[in-house]
Length: 287
Image 1: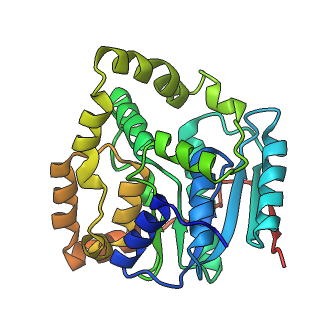
Image 2 (image 1 turned 180 degrees about the horizontal axis):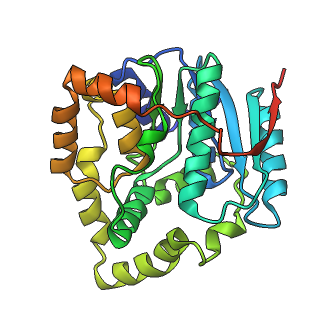
């Protein structure tokens, strides 16, 4: 029997507040500490039925080995397994993110699963905020890629946790984490922010992470009743592009609570997922 930790009870409480029970989930698992932390907690919080989805962008020579380890982990946990390997090089993080969400949404639409869970943490929030700010990227981003039914949702249960907390959890639960060398390649802007910019900023201002987290906290929608009232595409917008201020978030909610606007945007922003994303699909159900 699994030993419950404080994080178990925290995530369990989060689901209880969200009135989410006995759902089936697609888990986006990369094999890193955050995603394995999510997998361990979700597996322990039965009776959730889980399907592990792994994406191989072929960014490193060890990516196939990482995929194999995730496969054996899925087999050990008796979870369903889906594997996506790009048929061509995805050269930017933004295109890789589009590729992942397009395939996740397509899989969600064609299966009986209720929603998608990702392992984004508060540390990811800070990095994404800096990325958005430095790039001056349009915050409307790639939410136009999808339109899900009202019964399908996108959740980030670990969004209130830092990378230090997930590291502690993997340590005390003996999770077999491993490091992907692509996470250290500085040709990707995200890695530059994580390994170069953030350490420098924290050296100047040791409370930088706390300050930014307090700014981003309005986006950590712990009040599940408010979250459930948001249209699914707005959940997707918040979940994929987090560089929004509290004022911008409120404006989005007020604007698109109008049913006419919601219907219009729902009908015009559908995306035929994966039409432009060639990939190899290996759909294995572990029995």
